[in-house]
Image 1 (cartoon, rainbow, N blue to C red):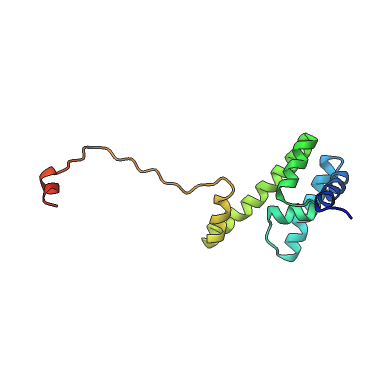
Image 2: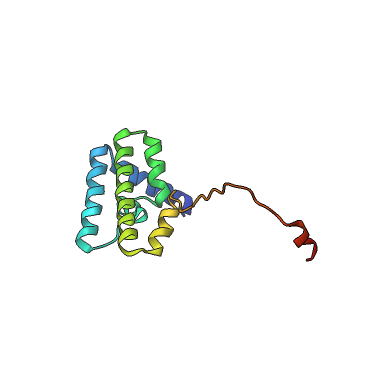
Length: 130
């Protein structure tokens, strides 16, 4: 009986053997985007990872780090940027809460900094009455 861990490693190994070069990986990434466009589907990092044959989103980054291929790394980073651009466009077009949530979880922020200048006067006599 194969344990879950061995199954996962076997699956990742099969994904690893698929992409021998950045060109091969880029072709498969392009195929993902073309299929999404044809089906009018939303681009997602998870969808891309699944389409490429990885077990989860993190596996695609682990794979790139393990191979240390600049071409593969570039292809994945560019694909992620395309996905982010799509989410940003939806955010601007539809003011989507889901798009905001996604962006916040991918290192974007909506923090506002407010600076105050001047003196603050506190009436201590008024506080004593309380």
